[in-house]
Image 1 (spheres, rainbow, N blue to C red):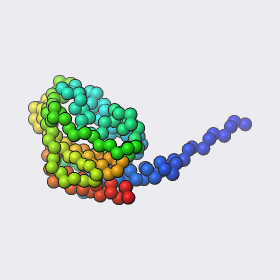
Image 2: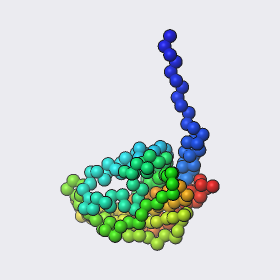
Image 3: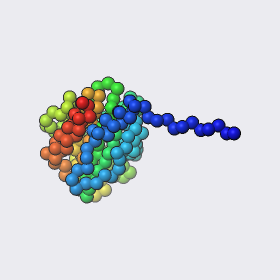
Image 4: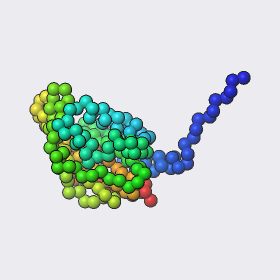
Length: 206
């Protein structure tokens, strides 16, 4: 008689609790938007959005390669790539929002954007894009927080492509990263989303 196959392993209570906490920290669907994908849970480096971001960086030839992950969570680092995380993405005609919540083994927060990364060029194929980033005076959220607004110009039509608003918030060992992409990203709208995200983080870390 063939041996019975082993039953699938159930997630441990601690990992289930961690997953529930990460999922609870994600934003609900914003008005006028739909879920593009997710929520997806797992090691940060293995998630779809993380893999897509790493692939995009590999395809681009950056004038300053050190700026690829500057001011953001660097999924190329083993401790960040292996950390438990949850990601969700929303989309609408006007743009998209991608949010990740990562649980790191020790409190950590990305360093400020280096001065040389405030403006740099990147080439994807024959198209050259210029990225200009400025720090935003967002009121402090959680234990640490930071917000930037990046404008991407150039490309084949040599026209403004998009704006990217980015927010990072830390509460304890949880770090929330959010990217808002659209034709025009208003700081006030970005701050409003950051406030909602911080409220969810606060509830998840109680």
